[in-house]
Length: 115
Image (cartoon, rainbow, N blue to C red; front, side, top):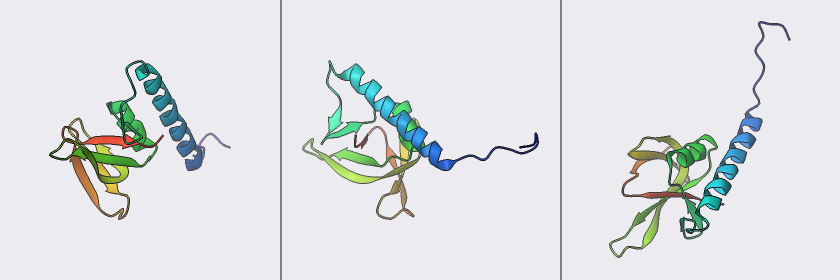
């Protein structure tokens, strides 16, 4: 390879590394919370921090969106891939119809992943 050529990036290795980073993050956050209990909804791990949401977005991990009904019971609103997030909201590509994207408030919704 000459000095002017740029190395080819392998998108598959990026996905593998991203999934590995997400699994490390889940293990690290879970082990820190074991004595206090892992925060979960119906067997899925809640994404509490910006870094957890960032890694889920980076690795394109499917995310569940949950909301509370008037009786205080969680129900699944949507599922899909995180496209963008801010401190106030998360934008999700719908899992059934990827052309549909919707913003969800981080204050009134919870986000989780299978692990």
